Image 1: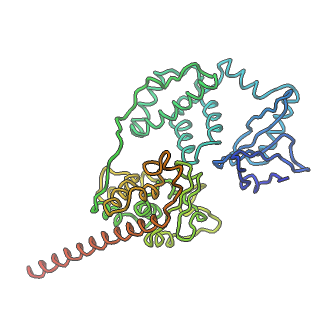
Image 2 (image 1 turned 180 degrees about the horizontal axis):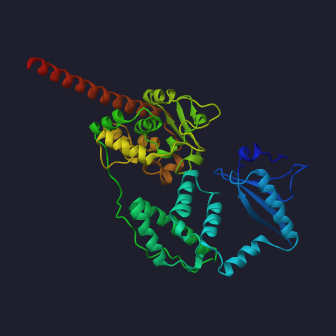
Image 3 (image 1 turned 60 degrees about the vertical axis):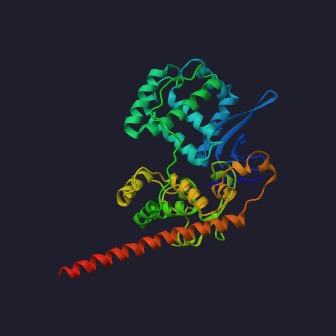
Length: 406
């Protein structure tokens, strides 16, 4: 049996079923009933298991990374001793709910712990930020005392500080949590229902012009952020897929994105054009670091300030990094790339791969994707060359006029 160590708790894989439990089998220091649970999405939690009559019961101790293995063992030992003495942790939790003593922060952390088992890391980070940062003013309030008016006040405050779009995203997260509370019997109704959205956002249709693409590329700084922007332009992938790119995901001129890192939970291969390969080859490799970009626990962060500086330098307004994805797809169609190939590049399960067609058509269009992305990379390179030649011509004309005036 596998022993739980500081290394194995980080590296043990999920089994084919996607939910694997590893008992603490160390004969010297192992705690009977203490286990590591690994989900298909990669989340890892420490749990305890015990039998109550003919039923096996489980309770969460904490997340790997939040608790060390030693801390989790100690907490598990204490909880299991309490169970032997008749203190059922699930019963204690249920009583707290029934007494209405649960506060917002306690519920939010429990909800996030549960969602960590099936939510992608990027989405989990966003939900955590919403519940633990944006709604900090609610943390000490009893969950049953939070009403629609209280939430409306907080949403207006978030919109004023972080913008209406962020407020609406935080509202969605909060509504999902309160909906879970209803399902768990903690609340009778979701108090977010009926609150106003803070923005009137519509589906974006922004496509950058050729001149704007050139301006963004040439103004992108010689930094990790600048490289990410150019890779987004060349590959059409999602921001977080590139920002959290791992060295191990670059295989023989292809970005091999695992299912756990894609929005639709489907593994996705992205052939790299020569221009994209050159950008990645220029990125220095840090010893012992798995991520291509960034220097913290994950990939690159700090998009807001870097994007603001890029907007000022390029002069391109009213665009988002996600618009580069739409722009690439639109321009590829203009170049004659077939719709099903564009969908394959974007990892979309729609159109040609939806419904019955998707069941029978399992092709990944690897050859077609590579040809299309190389065609797109060459097109971007031509745009840059034309712009550079134009700038040189203008400069020469200005110089000639200046000489004639002397």
